[in-house]
Image 1 (cartoon, rainbow, N blue to C red):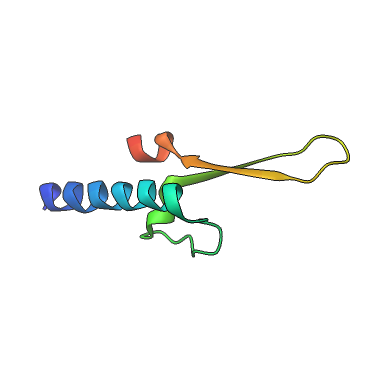
Image 2 (cartoon, helix red, strand yellow; image 1 turned 180 degrees about the vertical axis):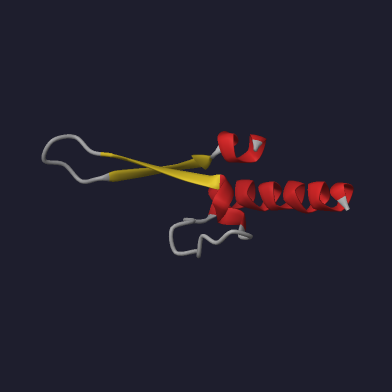
Length: 64
């Protein structure tokens, strides 16, 4: 069972990586079993400018 879960988690991390490369992950639901749980959003803004979102893999969640 442990190997099965490891396989599933590895495939989900691959899907999250592909999503970051090609799509905007914002409109996707972030649930406990969804691939977007491995994606972290960081928002930055300079004073008086538009907010910029940066998406990247959340390695702390993957390590858990």
